[in-house]
Length: 197
Figure 1 (cartoon, rainbow, N blue to C red):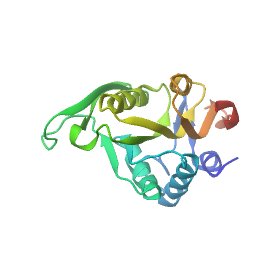
Figure 2: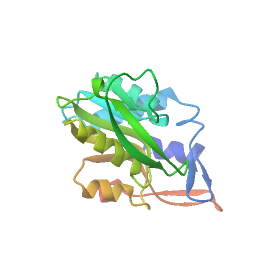
Figure 3: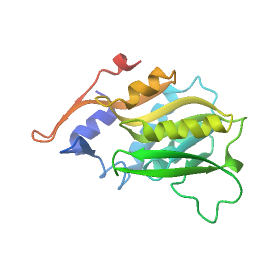
């Protein structure tokens, strides 16, 4: 069992509807020391990849991506969920559906910050159905950039997102893969990561 699985068992809360609440340390209140360990682990897993930029989606991925970026020595770009007046010029755009929020959003990245010279590591906190990831992948592809890898903090292995992304040929690494959850018993079971290589 790795450091993240141990933390999920200690502080995570399972709710009905396959919801795993990790807001006390990951996506509301943030444990920066844990984020640093996450960043080190992503750097270890993607050490052979030629990465010059990290991309994530607002909001929960931003903190994780920023701390991880320190280990890679690269900037972070995050896809915004709406085009605001402070984004000038052309944008790359994709529609993504959120499993957690049960809604669809248009996400945008300014063309000023992503181009064909970029070799990208995509980072996000959760992977469930894979819609957000597919949106980010399409934005990277539209820019002519290359997805070097995808780093996920927690993957719900019992949903199709990870399988779909891996079947598309992407190098996807999840630090914790949840095989099953039981809200009544408040239990989480993790998958053997070797089965997801």
